[in-house]
Each structure stands twice: as structure tokens, then as C-alpha cells.
View 1 (cartoon, helix red, strand yellow):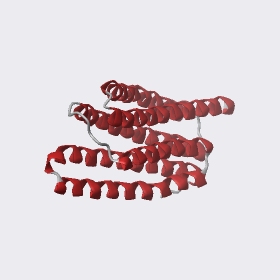
View 2: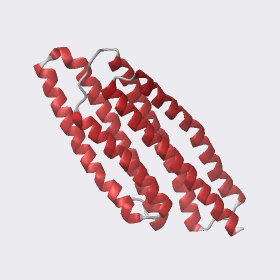
View 3: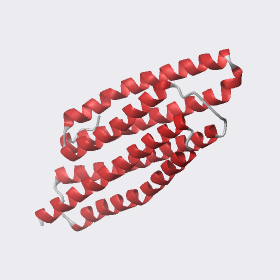
Length: 213
């Protein structure tokens, strides 16, 4: 019975990892679409996030089956309950990527638009946080989870910097106001992605320690 349970927990980890990888890929693709004005890439990102809906349902069903069919001990209960919380954050990350893709499609119709460099940096850091947070959960690595939480300050600072620079651009050139506002919104979405990654990392810590941060 325990071997079966452990095998299903391993499959749960694999499904969470696959969903996290899809989320990160969507972030990468949509960020690339911003600088390349590639409508196909933006649409691909939207399709990728749409596939996460089924992933969310599959993971939730697996969690419920583990709870109902098996007799998990406290450690296992923490792992399953954490997974159910994490999948919600992963879905929200997908939503943010889809929102960025929608803005990317609008920007692509406005001709050449200069993408703030820090947008790309934010995207890389946020995507890294998502991947590392799930890895911390699957490996039960509290130290790695704390490292993800610490990275959030860097993303917050980048957001503040992007916002300041874009506000200054609006003040200097009102003709660029629309695109500048769009990029502020994109930066905010990336900040939220990082926030969700922090949530995942905190659930990874709970899974090991039983303590909520």
C-alpha cells in the first residue's frame, strides 16, 4: 500500500513540475513576443496557458483521490494539501502570462515599440522563481524555498524601477503614454507572477516543517 502511495505522490510531483514548466515557457514565449512583435508567439503563449486548465483539474483530482483512497500520515497530508494550494498559484501565473500576451497582441499592431530592458530581467527572474519553487517542493528543500522568497525583493525593486522610468517617459513624451502604461501593467503582472512563486515556495516550506510563513 505504501509503495502505491509513494508512486502516486511521485506522479503528482511530475504533474506539478510539468505545469510549472508550461507556466515558465509561456512567460518566456510571451516576453519574446514583446520584443519581436511576434503575434504568433503571443497567441502560442495564450494556447499554452489554456492547456493549464486541464492540468489544474487533473492535479486536483489526483490529490482528492490520494486523500480518499489512501490513508496518508501527517507528512503526506501536508504534501497533498500544499499541492492543492500550489496548483491554484500556478493557474494564476498562467492567467498573468495570458494577460501579458493579450497586451503584446495590442502592442504588435502599433508598430515598433521599445521594450524596457528591465521587463526582460523581471521575466527571467520570475520564471526562475516559479521553476525553483516547484523544485523545492518536489525535493523537500527548505533552503531552496527560502531562496525563492528572498528573490522576490529583487523583482519588487525592478518593478519600482520600471514604473519610475516609464512615468518619467510619459511626462517627457505624452505621445508614448499608451505604450508606457501598457508596460507598467505588464511589469505589474510579472510582479504578481513572482508573488505566486513565493506562495508556492512557502507551501513547499510548510510541506516539510508544518509551519506557514
